[in-house]
Image (cartoon, rainbow, N blue to C red; front, side, top):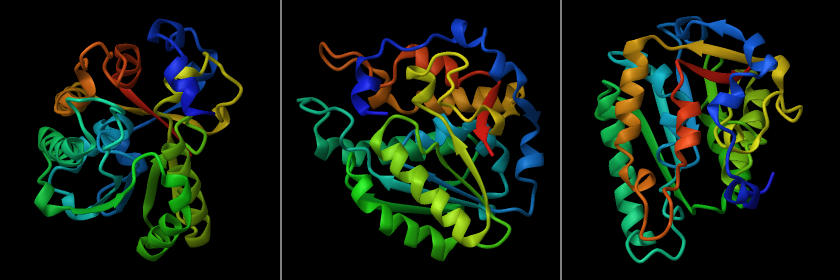
Length: 251
């Protein structure tokens, strides 16, 4: 899936996804079933904000468990507004990690208490860094960890590189892998056969978790506001899909 498809597609609205039979059949899971207290979560996000889009509801349950969370930010997200005079790469490189920090606080987490690794890799160029990502993850992982990454066919080159690297490292270390679709909600059709529906599960989010996720997402101002004549980076239709009372994971 190419990034051009993401940019050119109008997006699949949540109303269409509500008709998806495969989605309706996805097994419901309580977040504590997937990652109970005592189990470490290693989450790798291609860009600042992906950790919230992927798993803000799951992360909201880590208040007081920050020591069991490793967050890896692969890039600083400086490539989200190509050609923008307002959101230059220099400004975004500072702004987006600050937004992530504020978002984590909105989830009830203390960013200073968790292992937060910022790799500062170049936004839009993660495919060339896959070997490095595999090495980093392989050295980091412990036997009982849950490794969470963007789905390896998510449609954005960085998301896909992170997904491939995570899949390789998880297999090498024999740890459980959870892949999360983000942009697939935008370009895929309901019941799209390109999605691995037999592996699909829905993590159930109660009202408290979902409310925290919404507040965390609102911290990513650079991605939510129009830039001159350009629409927001994150389309409202995509946010609508990702702010439902569940998070879709492929296990």
